[in-house]
Length: 524
Ligand code: GLU
Picture 1: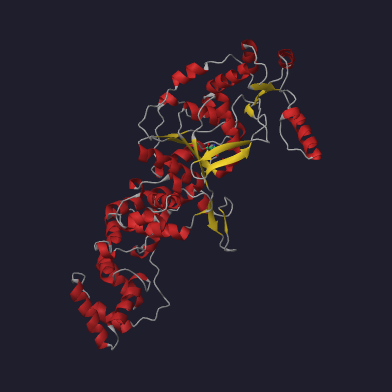
Picture 2: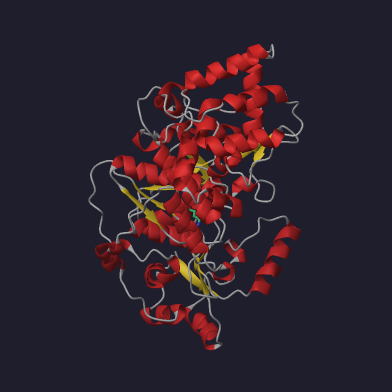
């Protein structure tokens, strides 16, 4: 501890008198009074314009913990890095949240939820620390800090502003005033009394107790250039006054944990429970080795990718949910739960390292999910996707909703034998593209038995029921001495251009008489 600053000096240092006392803040943001065991969580992205699938994973944990415990899930925008501001970046986040069903509840009472709008609150807490001698104004300029870093590197010391390197830590009031009179604007630094030879014990809900050397760095709490807080200070202040019970964040924050414990202790506040999530990895296609997903190499790193490519968002959630809470797949397959929202997730089971995100596995979840959709829902998803993200062809495919509905109804009436070849909305439209003449690509390689096709056409009647239709195929096959399956294959390829399709009778019924006749005649 050092000598605290006088109220007048604090006001000069912070560029204005603090708006609140600590007691006033406590009263303004009271305990939430939720039921026992209710989790208060928040998703706290920095708006960069890019949402990583790992962020979605974290947000899902936040949402789920709050949802299943009758708690509160907040969205807090960490926009304190004014140098990195990106237009429309918050919309990217909000759009993803809406699409993936992660509803947040930003009760005004605990707001504002943009850190850039909470300056008064940060400054009030900083004022308290300055008054108590737990923080101090630092007038080091960037060049001076560079100089210090060079010296530290040369001498083999840890870099940073600490101990005797912290030039301004014990400035007197007169010295501070002299700097201010000189027009200098300070940053506010923590007056650290930590000793790296001691250890501090911190808790992570998944990893258990972890000890770290105590922090001795006088970390910046309030930046000099814009008066906004650093991540560390904003985390302390916001998660205390928003009454967050559980902080879910990436494991890259684990090394900052001792500092955060120190900050909470300095304030005499109880730290939240931390859950540090592992990065999402993938198996590298070339090396076969597990590695972090990469923004540069992996399009699926970007949440927007799933929306653009028409992945069912619910299936993405289920797959992420299965990664973070093993046991979900089994519960779903056994019919114990209908979807991820009904599943009780145990925070202790969240993987500590190397969670694998595998697009092949996601395909399986997507196929299963689409297979359970009632046709009208499937149609709606496909149409909505095509209108927002589809190409011109896709848009034409969804013009006639009745026809699209018949196309997508094929092999979906028998619950035990529902087709499972639809993966994304985009791929669904590609998969059934042959139903539209402008997309149909006749198969020119196939060696058709033209006699069979001609003969079938002569007897074809669009009104035939399935048995009559089949008997006609059998009759033609007998006449030309081939197997009925082979005769049917000729028809299948003529109708669709493909050798592998769902039920041929259904396909021909949906295509209708005109298309069926045209396609056979085209080959003849
Ligand atoms: N803005 C921080 C990030 O994006 C938030 C970390 C946290 O959740 O506390 O990494």
